[in-house]
Every structure is written in structure tokens, then in C-alpha cells.
Image (tube, rainbow, N blue to C red; front, side, top):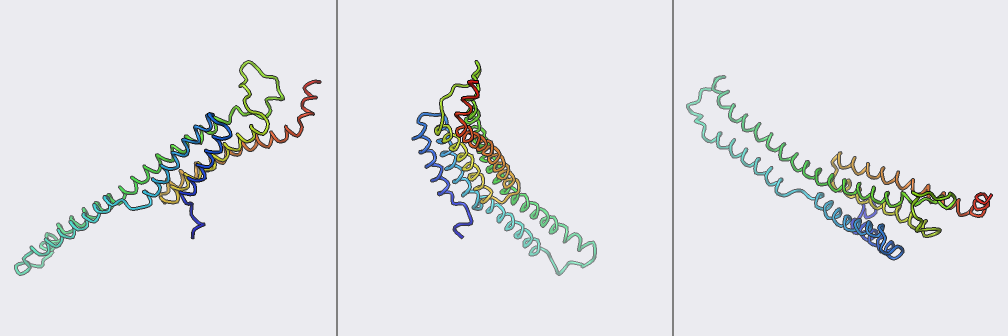
Length: 241
């Protein structure tokens, strides 16, 4: 179904559009550079998620080779036995079955090891990209920390950050930060969609929870800013009194 899975090209197109909007609204800003980094990360994540969705041919060929070698060894043992001179006693039977059992056990261990090798390799690659997305989310949060909607209502101190944005521009800046966090979570979801490993799915879920919590803080600021703008004259009179 076309609307039951995330399409990487659509996610990339949305992030590209957001980066252009930020660049047009806040040219040369740090948030624009973060958006550009997110665009690059989106392309890398989409490419890697697609690669993780496909089987690793080299590892699969190794598994098939182990199967083939084990089957060949068992066939060789069966063909080289001298059945005419064999006495089917318990001791003789154990001597015949022992090498075959050893080969079967080694073949099974080899297959399990190589099968888990593909799983571990995919998990490690996905977790590396999820760590990068987690770092981007924290960088976005750093850009909105000093955007305080109440700072005009309080007297500035020597350590207060300088006011660069006011009014609708400040609200738009916070809105862009929230959108970037949401799209960062969508990039993490691409890995959970492509790699069903429990650790990868849990890691993607952790990033979604993180970005949701950070976005909630931003929207609390936006709502506070809206209330502050509506009560602007009253706040000004309160400060004067």
C-alpha cells in the first residue's frame, strides 16, 4: 500500500523545502546551516536504509558456501565408507557417525554465526546513523534555547542574550525548529521500517520520544508567546507601574 510506509524521496523533498524556507526567511543564520546538515543527513540515511533493507550478498554467499561444504563433506564420508566389510556393531556405528555428527555441528555453528553476522552488521550501521540523528536533534534544541518569549517583559541583565528576533519572526523561528525535529524523527523511522532488528526499532523509538519532548517545549514557548502578544499592553502597563 502506497500510504502505509514512509517514502524516502518524499521525506528528502520535505526536508529540502524546509531548508529553502529557512534560508529565505533567515539567510546566513545558524539554523539555516543546521537545516543544510539535515538535508545531507537525509540523503545518507535514505541511501543507507535502502541498503539495509536488502540482503548482504557476501554474507549470504558465505552461508551458502558453508552449507555446500558441509553437504559435500557428508557426501564424501558416505561415499568413501566400505559398507561390505563393515560390521554393524555399536562401536563401529559410533566410529562411522562421529565424523558426520562433528561436521553437521560445525556446519550448523558456521551458519548461525554467519547469519548473525549480517544481523549485527546491519544493526551497527543503523545505530551509527541513529546516533547522528540524535545529535542533530540536540543541536536544533540548542538553537531554540535562548529564544525566550517573555524576555521583553523582564529587565535584561548583563548576561542576558541579545534580542535578534521579535514578533512573528520569533514565532516562525520556533516553528521551523519544531518542523526540523519532526523530520529528524521521520529519518529515524526509515531505519525502523527497513531494519526490523529490536535494537534498531527501540533506537528509532527513543529518537521519536526525544524529538517529541523537545518539540513540546518549543510549542509551549509558542503558546506562551501568543498569550504574551495578546496581553502586550497590559504587561507594558504592569512594568510601568
